[in-house]
Amino acid sequence: MFAPNLSRRSIGALLLATAATVACAQSGTTSSSSFTAPSTLSSEAVKPGDSYNIAGSWHFIATDQRTGDVRTAFDADLTQDASGNASFVVPPGVVVTLTRHGNGPTITYKIAAFGATTVPCQVDLSGTAHVDTATNTGTGTLSGINGDCTNLRASLAFSKNP
Image 1 (cartoon, helix red, strand yellow):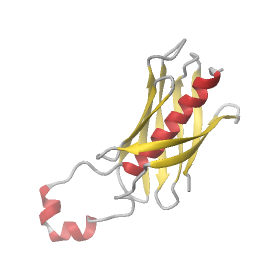
Image 2 (tube, one colour):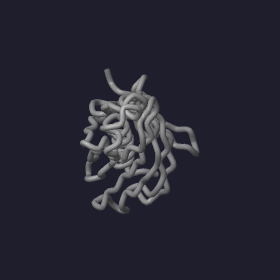
Image 3 (spheres, helix red, strand yellow):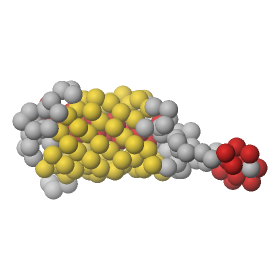
Image 4 (cartoon, helix red, strand yellow):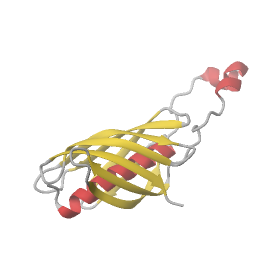
């Protein structure tokens, strides 16, 4: 079982991080030909999801994959960096990051949550999330060790708050 506050916060942090990464990330690699070649500009200039910003308030729900029970539901504020990746911290010090992979109508994020200050075990969770940029909604999976030393497997559902 999860520690009451840590499990909800850990999963919440991961969900928020996932949402933040999806919204904020932009492709970090460009070539000089992208700036000079007209054919490249016309076919790749701005695609759906290229300028998607995941920053803002998101609502997350984490469901235990084994039992189907809702483990936690919460709201979180996500921030995005210049590379389109997102992060947030869930007390008592669980850092959640979402690393963006690609652009388009659906953006994939790698989720990582780590908390060295959690007791009795360090939170060490990872997974993948997919964000639909047209609807500001997402789904994902998360697994690893939770702060109470249990092996967590959760499904995530999240949406941007109005």
